[in-house]
Length: 78
Image 1 (tube, rainbow, N blue to C red):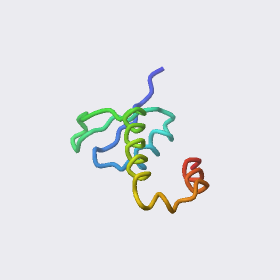
Image 2 (image 1 turned 30 degrees about the horizontal axis):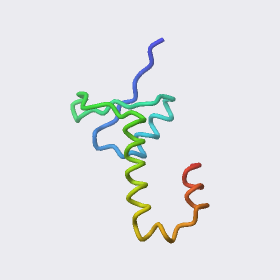
Image 3 (image 1 turned 120 degrees about the vertical axis):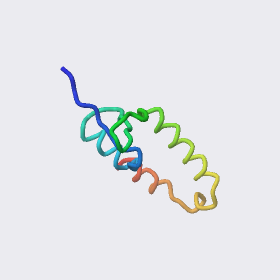
């Protein structure tokens, strides 16, 4: 059974893209340009790399010393 792939515009936000992927019960998204031509594929490993990078940057920031662990857990559960 064939399923329609999730397609997102290259300027879509990560939040918009993840929303579309989750709603379609898929695990990746095709990234297209304004003409609908494929520019790339966003996969879970792409997102994982960016999340790890952002986490490393946050942990080394001054702001991280003021965040309670409970607040981080709440965000992760959303």
